[in-house]
Image (cartoon, rainbow, N blue to C red; front, side):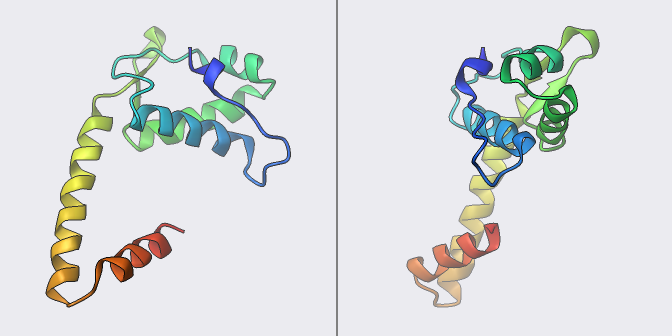
Amino acid sequence: MPADLIRIDDDSGLPPFEQVRSQLARQISDRTLAVGTRLPTVRALATELGLAANTVARAYRELEEAGMVETRGRAGTFVSALGDASRTELRHAATRYAATARALGIGADEAVQAVRAALR
């Protein structure tokens, strides 16, 4: 159950929904949460974390918009196989970016710095 792996830091500058979203996204990306894993209900996770249900619902909604989870009506919310497709597309985009950087004569360090700046 992912609630065991989620920690809310009240002193963090990040809002609680973003802490939930980012921690779940990381667990999906690193496959701690496998494709097909059923997530706790919004209400159950909110209660366990001491958050409002709307906070967890927003995190789930953003994960769904990113294709990392899918809601199957009353059956619940599950880790989506689209997350795997997203990683595949990301690798393809990275390969295209690296080829563009090389063609422009940009070194690896500068290219990585450009990506980090773009992700901020």
